[in-house]
Image 1 (cartoon, rainbow, N blue to C red):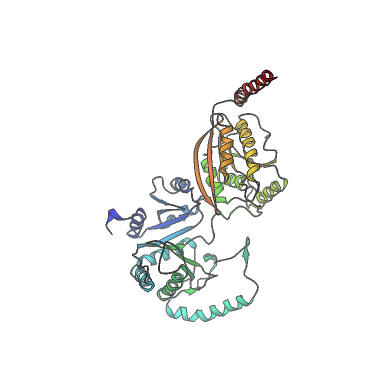
Image 2 (tube, rainbow, N blue to C red):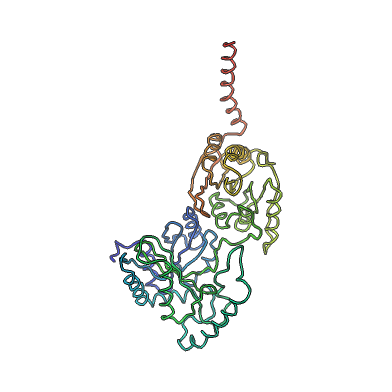
Length: 457
C-alpha cells in the first residue's frame, strides 16, 4: 500500500516496525475521554507524542525500555501491544479463503510478532519460556492437562467482584513454565466467518508456531484479533485486568470507575492549593482518585446518605497508604460553605436509572445547580457534572443561565449508558445580584396578574 493511502495507525506502526527499540501501544479508554487520555500521555510520556485517536482507544509508539511511563497513566483501561495490522479483502462467500489469508499473514510477519512477544514478556515480567522447543512442550503438556483436570473437579472457579476470574498474572509464573495462552476475536462488519471460529482456527496456528499451551481460563497471554470490516489488528494484552479496578473495595449501586473519575478531574484542570469537592460522593470514588492523583489540592467529599458516607470512610481506610480528605454528611441544597468559596466541584449526578428518578431530577437538578452556583468562586470556579439525564440538566442550566457558561459538553459511553459530561465556568455575577435579577423578572408578572384580577372584580 502506498504511503499516501495508509491510515495514521499504519504509519505509526510502520515507524515502530522499522525500529527495534520502539513498540506500538494500543490503550482503551471510555468513549468520549480520548482527548483527556491523549493530554495525559503528552504530559507523562512525551510532550510532542504522536498519537492516533479512534473511538474508545488511543495508539502511540514508545521505546520498549520506557514502558514504565505507560503504567503511570490513569485515564486508560486496558493496554495492548499492536503486533500487526493488515487490510484484507475478505471474501464474504468463502470462509476458508479468509482463514488462509489470516494464516498467511501470521507466518509472513513472524519476526514482528517475535519482537512483540519479547516486549510483552518484558512488560509483564513473565519469567517463563516464550519460545520453547517442541520437546520442552511435549515434556510438560501431559502434566499440565492432568493438573487442569484436577482443578476442574475441585471447588468452583474463583470469583472476583461478582465475575469469574479469567487469566492469571504472568509475573507469578516460574522460570520453567511454558507460556499458556488463548486467542479471542472481536469483529465488526459482515464476514463469512464468526468470531469464535477465528479464535479456534488461529489458536491452533499459534500452537503450531510457538508450541505454547492452550488454556482458555488460566492463560498468561491473551491474543486479541480485532477485525473491523477489512482492518485486522493482532493485539497482545499487557494488563491482566482493567486499570479502572483500583481504589474501591466497598461498592454502592452507582460506583464510578476510577478511570472515569480521573478523566472528570482532569476536565476541572485543578491548580495546586485549590479546593475540589464532590458533593455527591457515594462510595468516595472521585475524592479517593483526587487525593491520590492531585495531592497538592484540598479534597472534600460529601453526601446526604449515611450509608454512602460509611462506604466512603471504609474505602479510604482500605487504601494501602493514608490519604487526606474530609468527608462530611450534608444537605446538598444547603452546603456549609460561604458564597464564592470553592474552586471546583466534580460529581456524578443521579442518573435516574439505578438511583433516583427522572421526575425527581427535574426538580432537584435545578436546586443543586443554584446552590453550587452560590458556593463556587465567581469568574474562576468550575463545575464538572456527569449525568445520563440530559433533559434535567438542560432545564437546570436554563434556570442558572446567568451563573454559568457551558465551556464543553462530552458524550460519554460507559456501562451501556450514553452519558454526558458538562464543564461549566462560573460567571462574574454575584449570587445576590442573580437572586435580585430573578425576583425582578418574576415580580412584574405577579403584579400584572394581581392588577388584572382587580379590574375584573
